[in-house]
Image (cartoon, rainbow, N blue to C red; front, side, top):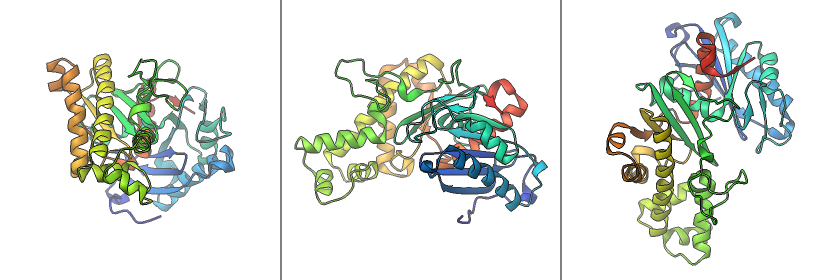
Length: 350
């Protein structure tokens, strides 16, 4: 594990400590945080999903135990652990209902097996919900009492936090913002879940790449098409780069993605009225630090202003998340902490 400059020394940390695990199809991230959400130890390793769920559960549990020892803590110094997992989930049962990028993991008692291997009670949550709680607790949402987080990556994840309540719903499908219907037309794009017109079909990295490929195949020209023809991989990073260079197709794709996000965000605002809506995940085009990121964010805000009440548009903060790839593991730890303090707020525990 590479040394991290942002780790808080144990002597300066505030106990008790909490462990958080962020399970992804490619990597597993494990964080150990103090009671104020500050990282004291961190570990990442490949998921190796093909080895099976039990193998991964054992390694996740072992990673938690190892972090505690590496930090120089006693096992009793850690009060609990949280696990964020791709969904959809059955949170009360602690299982993944349909593990699309984790083949063979369906209905495996993941939460309980991780708890057995690490020796701590484990709070179970959707990975995007966990990331949302991380931003709410110690990230860009820490100044607000309610927020929505949209994570843009291969898909579109969502987390909704209202008054320290992690919204998971009656059937473990709450906050599935990527599956809101934004296009009811008969020829709507198909979401990977198999249903048409979902936000994920228009605002995910996979969708962006697909729309770019379709446009190039239909004869679009410009620097983006030229880069692809020269052998560069068609990725959101390439689209963002060429948008900053002024390529018309790349700019259209970036702005069109933002438009669809704005449409989805307005529905969330009307249903929930959160103080803030944050955009996170891998596809943020450099956030505020890059011209493409600023263009992307302003186009989202523009669509929101066009479609909602003036007062709501003026008062709702729309911005980028701040924790990056740490949001899920920190948030999972935070949900374990929340479960200890308010069992109704945090969702499923072992």
